[in-house]
Image (cartoon, rainbow, N blue to C red):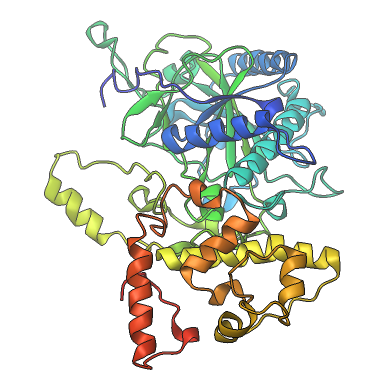
Length: 501
């Protein structure tokens, strides 16, 4: 990519943090709009801008200023400070370390492990880390719940993945607040492999990472004192995403852990940092990044997605421990999102060969999307559990479903049927047999869903293909009549995986 590769300023979704804080009761219009803006921005750009409340920006600025002076006063680091990048140490990094090959210095603040008060002979760490960690940690949890709401998951469904808040005695945080400095002149001049740029090449773009990076966090919140962070969008373009941040703005992007926990519905951000304009800068580019991490002993699973009726397949079906997940290598070209959501932008072959790209595409295992009627069945089961059972419990009614044929032929036409009173009490849709929704024909499932979740059909954007022009119903009805007339199947067996005969 050339110097202009990341020059475009995208129209990232901008959301106030206060609008993303959930409250008891009905959804407010403000919360709905904020969640919608957030989810659309993450789907299109894999990032969003979060506006923190007035006053919190002062803390952000003070911590970055303190970090700038902290790195500036440090001499060139010795070999003992060089970070090895050992995956086993993902939740143990603390204090100062450096990677001279990418011109980066880092100070990790990890509560329970990083001292914030200088001991005898110890240097003074940057100021305000504990307060900022608390502020961004609360913000990240609120944003995570908002993302869960956009996927129609239950409230706080990701809580079991997170550290205790506050930490218990003896616990060490897995989430971390990282202060970074790219391209400081002292670091550039102290390493014999430093890349130098002549006058004629002063506009060359140099990136502070050997290759684009993907965080293994759930969420990452970033703020810097100079632009330079680029994220690859759904069309494969590298976009400068921190070029127009206001004083109260922080950048948000998802990581691999959230990608795993949502069965690929929330794609992680592929990012890199441009440090080509920092030649001779004595301070370099300072930034802070709060990474909301899953605790090491947790299990990444997609049970919340399954309970909400989302399809879960391929590599997401098997739970995996967080510790094992962090050790795993995640090839960029295999991070492909679920059907119906934006694909993760994997690198295009440098030679532009379409043949090579097609060959790679064939080699990538893809999970088969759910058949329309199977997804409809999952939705019906969800509504039965979340809506109908709640009404029945409130009224003290024990649900005893009928058989499909018996209810169709005897109970529905009768004014005095065994299930008539129960159907009336719980608001069962007229004309729909009182059987378990799993066993209802597809057309009856639609009526059932509309009865308990008005507007459900319209909200699906015709994805199920069950309400288009009545052709599917006509064909299914003809097939059913044919099968009945020849006594080939019983009504309980007429539950197709597809709408075709």
